[in-house]
Image (cartoon, rainbow, N blue to C red; front, side):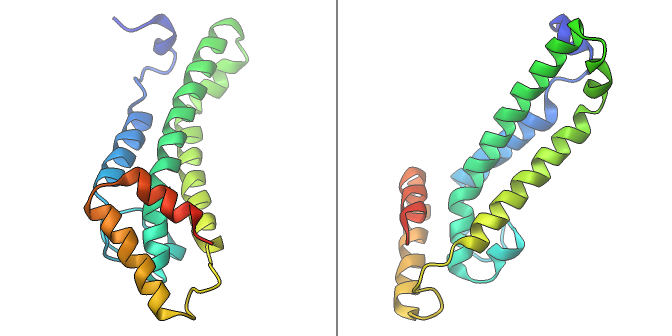
Length: 154
């Protein structure tokens, strides 16, 4: 039996759970080929460095999005029991979830577009070494190290 507040939306966080599990899958199975199965945002398909950067930061942003949408949904559902005006907002929750998902992809795209170390497209050797290091972390399934490596790059 579902808790009574879940009967307002008649759903059990399916979209949010799919977001989280998809992000966990993408974090565990990093694609090292541009345009492959991964976080595919327009600015991430420009070169291998930006592609690997998107794969490093994307899943964490998607997981945070899924968790925040679950919290937001529960909060609105519980508050809608006490405030009748919120029941109309709860009926729009699927659209709010969609906006959160699209917003997280927009955030990932902006972060990848803003990622431009001074050596990018100037020093091919350094670019190749960066990609090789990131791909090695991905192959060894060292996700935390890949994230730290990518976010610490200047």
